[in-house]
Amino acid sequence: MKTDDLRNIPSVSRLLDSPALQKLVDRIGHHAVVEGVRQRVEALRTRVHQASEAYVPALTELADQIAESIRRETKPTLLPTINATGVLLHTGLGRAPLAASAVEAMRAIASEYASVELDLSSGKRSQRVVAVEPLLQELCGAEAACVVNNNAGATMLALAAVAAGREVIVSRGQLIEIGGNFRLPDVMATSGATLREVGTTNRTHLDDYRRAIHEDTAALLLVHPSNFVVQGFTKSVELRELVSLGRECQLPVIHDIGSGALLDMAEYEFRDEPVATESVRQGADLVLFSGDKLLGGPQCGIAIGRRRWVEQLTQHPMARALRVDKLTLAALAATLRLYRQGDVARREIPLLAMLSTTEDELEVRARQLAERINAWHGAVAAEAVADVSYLGGGSIPAQQMPTWCVDLDAADENVDRLAAGLRVGTPSVVGRVRRGRLLLDLRSIFPRQDDALLLAVKQLDVTIEPSGE
Ligand SMILES: *Cc1c(COP(=O)(O)O)cnc(C)c1O
Image (cartoon, rainbow, N blue to C red; front, side):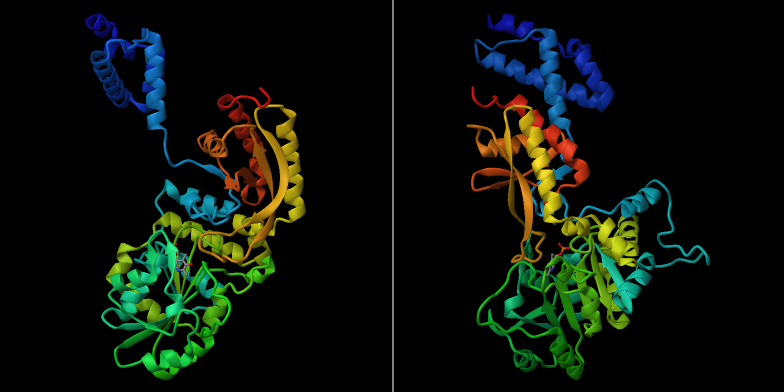
């Protein structure tokens, strides 16, 4: 019986002749399919051999099963998703989406050669930073700029270039962990600079910095604690005060502002968010920030400030290891260009557009979507509900934005399974599970995605039983 079953297993070559697997060969190539079929046939043989009653499907059925299994396994894992979490700068979902002009700028040079390090008028070698430096000078009033892979890289590079083997003074209340293994003390240790902590968790005075300065001090560091707030009996030193102390002692002041807002975020009801321009104006020697947080551009780390210090960064060997590619430069330059006309930036940078969306607009869309979902009488029932969104990405934790969501309910279906169903659907939708409810937050969903969102919700009908059964 066992031998009979084993004999019933079709050969790899017969399976490969089936229409399902032929189609797959056209899509992913002969080698990947042959290998996939071979492994699965082998596994089936082992199962049949071990268990006396293993069921061997007929040729076509087996070929279909194998094709589906290979298809699932070879599906790319990096896919576009609809961000229904309401978290606008979701690190897991790639932070800021790019403006159309930034995408176009990347597209234009992606499949061509480009003047990355070549001055076209002189024909001489140039620095790749010239693609963005004049824009950063103009927009932020800085003398010079340097762009690296991300802000963690900018921080590491700044500390290595300015303070390796020497001490950097930082307030105990600013020894932050951003998440994803960015812990300031570890970054400092890796850079070769020695951390000199001053003050206490809740209070640091200018005199604490002053007393810590000695001949081995290389810099004063101020870090914006972007993902937490300390309330109550607190005192931190203002940038302005630290800059005057730095001048007095001839020490550079490095300001890690984190999110890199170029516009005053008070306009969006976010208070106390440092603005890059303001930090330069107040005299910070180096201002460090991310490109893909509040700036709304590609992932990168930007260091601007006095030429003397920026040049130390650019000339450090680590700068070469952290350098950005032409696509990042193109996207950053295009994004910065939008800031030249403030209102264009507000409209065309997706992050800023999402921040400006009014509660009324979100409510209208939430009610429409809920109505359309309920009109199907499918497995899922929907209701429009008011809630709050967060910016995320390690930005402004205490501040919330009012929002509207579609609250999905599928009778007895477990909410985590419902959320998982949406995540693996086409298109993939990542929602927010909160207090046992699955919410689709419209604050982080582009209006143009509403129809696709409906389609994704409708697909849930296939995976779960209709309610009321
Ligand atoms: C986010 C953040 C960083 C890390 O920036 P990445 O671009 O994610 O590397 C560093 N410092 C502060 C204050 C931040 O908010």
